[in-house]
Length: 205
Image: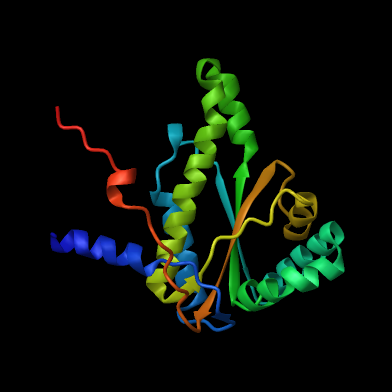
């Protein structure tokens, strides 16, 4: 394998869902902000629409976010069920980190494109979600490169208005995901992958 490809593969292998996090900075907040800015500036979007929005939470803002998610879950599933199945995960794997990147989709962008290009209107919501994935992956790679452990979470669609209100973002920003990160205390085990010949098809002629 070419050395350049080895570097890329190494970055991808380093990125991993990590759940044992400590509230410590292994790189500076400024470096994290540079990663987010780089992802937003460099990753392409359909028609250059740039619908992805991010909010970086650190310190008390990070803690308040996960406290709110905890309360939303308790209101939805009850405290007994929350304590039994979810509390340890929220407190020990997400709130325990040093920060969180919250991802939003600015739906006003998609609505405007649907109006301007009616022939492709049915595709714009799909494209908006596709670029969320590339941006989230880019942030994840960047955080991993800085030495942080992180995971991608989706406690969404339960009471998103409260999340938007807490963060002071417009109602038109659709809450898509959040990525807690921090000092990795131990690496989570690798998960099995399907054989390549089941998921990759090559056609030469």
